[in-house]
Image (cartoon, rainbow, N blue to C red; front, side, top):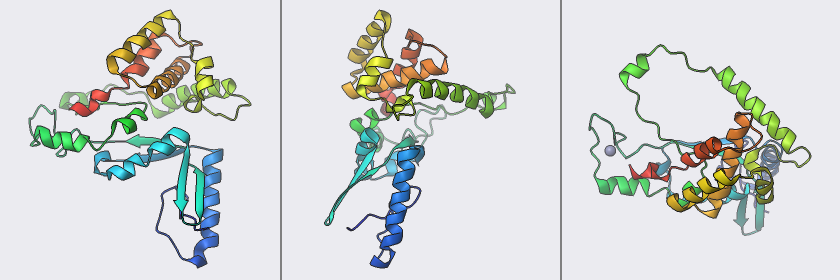
Length: 249
Ligand SMILES: [Zn+2]
């Protein structure tokens, strides 16, 4: 079978000749095994709108199913491809839109063309949308000590330990991989949360897919808080991360 070339980091590389086929198969197998057993790869795409739209749309299936399907003349391969997608983009082509200096030279039409490369369905599969404003000089000079990475790691480890206990024996390592029935079981909402979710659903035009994704994020925020049940504060935070207005400048 004509296998696709995949390097250990998971990025497709150029097809190689027959002599390399055995090595290529071994590499594919190793990548698949890594993905299956660890599922910890991070794919970071900087300057997201600079990627070709077809490339971005091809991410939809692996983001949804954790599987990539490669069709070739000799057959079709399904490979495990679980990864964490992290993307960054500027607010416009020149990067200055919204800055107090007024340096942006892009027209509304140019901005629209720039952000339209990110489709709604792709955005729908990204759980956390975070707008990062430019840093003011005074804030940069401030001497306040931020939380250290070691302290953050402690909080994350504690939340992951809760999740390990929750999913013991299921083969699922964390909230992100909960199946819909698990979401129903572990992300129960009380009446206040339910009313909040309903309001967000109608106001923000959330899809059925994003509904489950919001609940998984809310469950994780509650775990970071050491809370047994999802509270209004956890759900509110999860909802505000689905800020689709981020692409409207
Ligand atoms: Zn601009």
